[in-house]
Length: 202
Ligand SMILES: Nc1nc2c(ncn2[C@@H]2O[C@H](COP(=O)(O)OP(=O)(O)OP(=O)(O)O)[C@@H](O)[C@H]2O)c(=O)[nH]1
Ligand SMILES: [Mg+2]
Image (cartoon, rainbow, N blue to C red; front, side):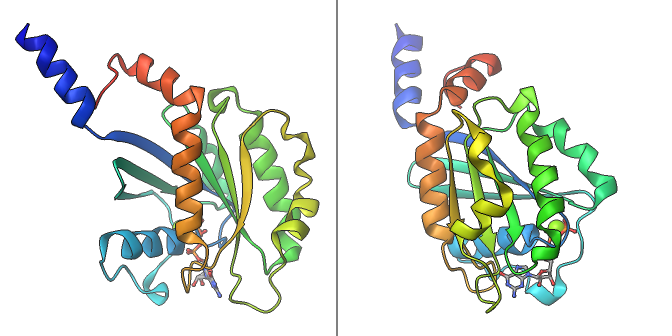
């Protein structure tokens, strides 16, 4: 009886934990975004952009939004490091795909890297948030233009959206996180990962 009540208590008051992978080619702004996220949600300073170096390993950020714990995994996007991304797919509830919207010469690279990500069966059903980053720059394209370049028509049934952001000044970041939390809470994948982990509460 005690364990039943305790289990119920845990279920009602414990927080959901979601893992979010931050992907995108090198220099898209993933780590800058992660630092901005941390500063917005944790009231910390965060690393200033000029102290951020290209990522080789993994950067982790933990924030809480309402009753939800979010764990962000930021990986390096240099070509030789992209093969590491798939090691994190199975455990990810959702993907943020960051694009430098001010650098059209690299859209093709972004597009093919994104296609590979989406083809991977370990990410089936994971909601996708595509960020058109660097909106503080005049030359940045809009989300509509970026959608055309990336040609995302073929996403079929995947839940996805585009959001214009600036990892520099924080534009669009809260809206992005709100969308993500909502999408992950609704997704069947969250339930699948919970069952696989062998418990319904964390
Ligand atoms: N103007 C502007 N520059 C940005 C923005 N976000 C990132 N940058 C710059 O873009 C460059 C790359 O940023 P990073 O955050 O290191 O990019 P990354 O995607 O983590 O790169 P890798 O770790 O190599 O995969 C840096 O010079 C950043 O200062 C932004 O929103 N606006
Ligand atoms: Mg980085």
